[in-house]
Length: 456
Image 1 (cartoon, rainbow, N blue to C red):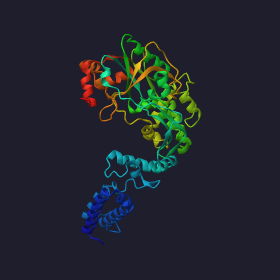
Image 2: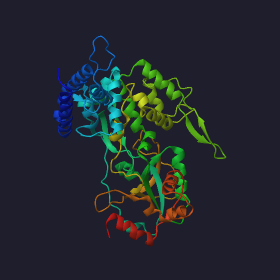
Image 3: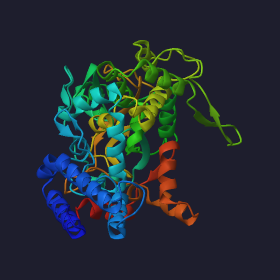
Image 4: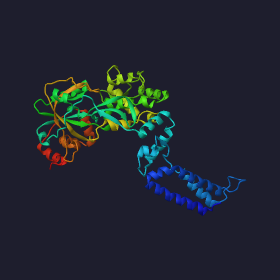
């Protein structure tokens, strides 16, 4: 029988090997199971030494061995070494989630533990098998012609009234057929986004933007508040989740369901959650309250009819955009991911333009056309039907290749006023997403902008 010193020596050797494996992830992964068995043998040996009386198996016969046994046991069953060794599609879960990253934080370790447990759900395993060896497939959208991006000269901003135009972060120009190994039942067409004015037919028809009819009418009215001014509309990107409202994200998620096949129980759970989904509103006094526009919705998330509701206004209770937002928001939650629904971030990564930075604006600039109302574009956008008239002028580009500039450099007066009132910059930026305003760009504002863009 090995003595206690031998057990500790083996334990120290094992610790050294852990460090070696951390430095070599490939070897680390291959040896996981063996190391786990080695620690199990160590624990069993320590237990036999600690409780050495076969007639009284609960009696401690070696206090040093008992202390070592409890210390080793408290460390857990190789908690940092065998984590994530379950294989999916030829990859361990650790590799699937974090590649060859050698050190994981507690949140990342928790994610591995959760996924190992969730793999017992058939739909989760199907999804992860596809994701393990899969790639994204996106092809150029047939028949789409766009012009090249134009670098806008910042000096031409001086004397112009700038009006923010909110938009989501969606990309343009590709039909996405597969997302990280999961095939879509139908391709999802990327339609922008800040590059919407680059569509050749939009350029020819002098249509620079699109939205839902009410929002489009309000933005045109915003332009018309400055009848004596030269108005330039300046693109203002929302946060990453702003894409939930357009068709890109919701379609990309729903069209994975045929391949992943969540269970009937999971689909039922999602349908019930959608019916109970709260959409906040405010009354005339500004008091917030919740509405439940989908409470009477009988269409299942797995039904082809759901896509019709996501695209067309067929219900008096909700808009397609509200439905798309609710579906995307629910699928982002772990509650449904663990039941076998798609991975929200996979779709988000594919559908957004990575060049858009939070808090920046001016990636697209167009000239407003006074006196023109809502237009009907030849180019049909699947989310927005109402065209906003305008002439594409280009976009701000830094000397290093970045797009846009911080909002405070384009609207310095607004930021200065709100700071004096004690408002945060985040609150000011948020107000620009929702309100209709404008500010004349001055010569004094030009120099900081030029310096930021690298021209001076």
